Length: 317
Image: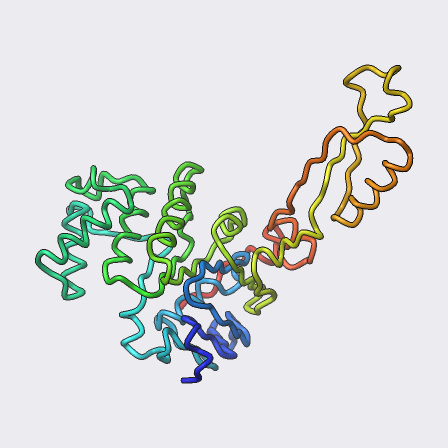
């Protein structure tokens, strides 16, 4: 293992995955993907349907074998069985035995991980508090809402105290309140487990923008962008709204009669302020509007979630 990998929890080296579609035909699900996910960060994997997000996650987990390339997890090459001991995984649609209570279910999965006794009980209590399900821990899972089931699945993914958390569309199918709960939970996990790496896929740009330090963007199986959120939403791209009043007409205009100027970037703002000072124009207020992730990606022409060619189902095996 290269020493440079010591600070990387996921290393993907020129990985491709081709699926057979029958009759001698095939489709490329992931195409020459290379990506490094640093330790301790929250990293989002973005892309429209069919871009290769789920395929990439399944190859990291060892559920799918790459057609070409290598994947390393926590310093071990996939599919080494030891890699799974480092990972906590949340599938897009978790399913549990409905007849078990939340606590019984976590106990069952803990036993599968060779956990037992007081250590397991304490771990389950900690996780139930973390995901705010202690109050429902004795209720059967069949009575859980979608959001409660999602939080229980996150608790289950944390049982083995993993170094790497991989969440596949963790906010999928949730209402706005449920999405907010999961976002807050991911923040809390990152706060309480700062050394853990959280890698999650999503097509909801708002969630990625609020949670992630970095974002990887896939399009048609290829990596288009991998950079920090701050770099993508750099200050130079911010917009400013300036309310002004001509000082020479201040006595003749009604109090609410203001003119608004929309400016793009700090250079444009500074230039306008200098001109306003020279011309005797009064600045009433300045409002900053930070670019959103959606605006940045659409500006670069990288992502179009509504384009018909991007709404094809992702090839699965």
